[in-house]
Image 1 (cartoon, rainbow, N blue to C red):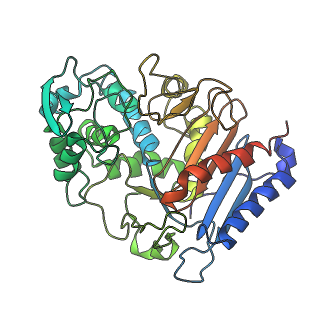
Image 2 (cartoon, rainbow, N blue to C red):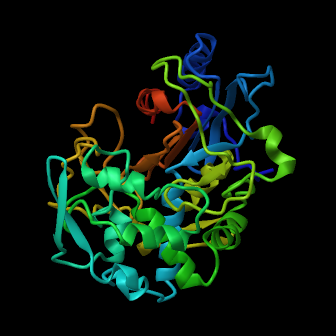
Image 3 (tube, one colour):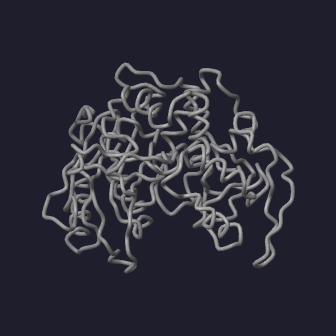
Amino acid sequence: MTPALPTARPEDIGLSAPALARLARVLEQRVAAGHIPGAVALVARHGKVAFHQAFGRLDPATDTPMPPDAIFRIYSMTKPIVSVAAMMLWEHGRFLLFDPIAKYLPEFAEPRVAVISGDDMGWTDADNPITVQDLLRHTSGLTYEFRGATPLHRAYAEARVARLRQTNAEQAATLASLPLLHQPGTQWEYSRSTDVLGRLVEIWSGQTLGAFIAENIAAPLGMTDAAFAVPDAHHARIAEPFPRDPESGTDVTLLNVRRPAVFESGGGGMVGTAMDYARFMQMLLNNGTLGGARLLGRKTIELMTADHLGDIPDESGTLPPGHGFGLGFAVRLKAGLAPFPGSVGNYYWGGAAGTTFWVDPAERLTAVLMIQAPGQREFYRVMFRDLVYAAVTD
């Protein structure tokens, strides 16, 4: 079981117990109304947990109550972990951020950029190489097959870039064979960049991505269930979704994490518990250290959680107003504009199945919500943030 962080009464760390009880009631009501099967929520401040509760059922097909140590598919919350892995190797001098990735992945030596006109697609040579920084901040020109309906997005689907029976090396080679959506370094486009970054971690470390994370992040931090698959002995703790989303009516199929992963997706393949991720967040908030283990230096955390976009636009509108993007995280740049509370300097991300987290250095606050409800993720990300910040008293 994941080692727990210290606990505290909410009032002792500047949080309102009645407000946190209100958060609990809202989640209980959402479960009772049939919107989600269950959830686990955790809120910590000043390194101490004030709220860690489980709601509803582990699996809608059974009556098993949701345990606090339920294991969830965290999808894109894998990205910050892989970004930390990369920056740990950066601290060992394995690469420079402005290195072209072709230095390590020669198949990316001559990137092409798609030229799309209706249903037709040609290409032109890229003006600049893709750099490691581009992968970390999603300015590589890569995309996701589900983020559009252009010929390039169809080409991603036809090339089966998401197939599970492939290695990280094979996926990187497939991506390199396809044109880019944008010129490198010119647009923020949420993408398979972190999958490629995961392959680079393998090259720089000489280990599989899963082995590197297990040895250098999960074990030192006590993230005992954080991995790319769930061992047989722990299958009974896997949280499951409704087979059909009650809001949209669409069928829900999530990653099968009961068998060893061949493709260890750096962009979305991991599982973990709320406490696993709480320990990861606390390491970040502690400037790279937790419980005697130091993963990163303070200045590295500062670099990762600063904005790396500047004037580079996000024409997709994915990033909320007043936000930029660092090396693995969205970063809040303005107190206003976004339609949810927070502090300048917040950094966060979420996962496709509904999991979400954030770290607020100004308030010394971390929070994570674990659900498995892909069609409702936007609602719960904002609702959870609203109600947690409503509990901050001083």
